Image (cartoon, rainbow, N blue to C red; front, top):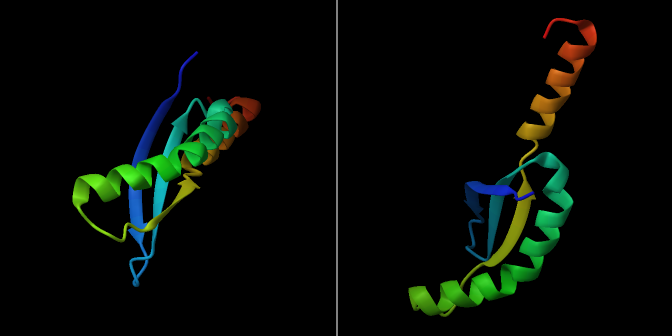
Length: 85
C-alpha cells in the first residue's frame, strides 16, 4: 500500500540558514518509513534547489511531522470507545 505525503507548511529561520518542512503522512502507520526515506533524500533535494534557484546558499532542510492526523485518530478512537461514533 502506498502513502500520501503532503507538505503543509515551511518555516524559515530569521537567518535563512534552516528551513523546516512540515509534512503530513497518510496512512499514519507509514510515518516512520516515510520519514526515513525523506531524511535520506534531503541532501539531494537541497542540491536540486541550489541548482534550480542559482543560489549559493540554500538553507539546511529539516522535517517536522504534523501531529494533526495523530490527534484526529486519537479522537476517533475515543469516540468509538464511548459509542458516540
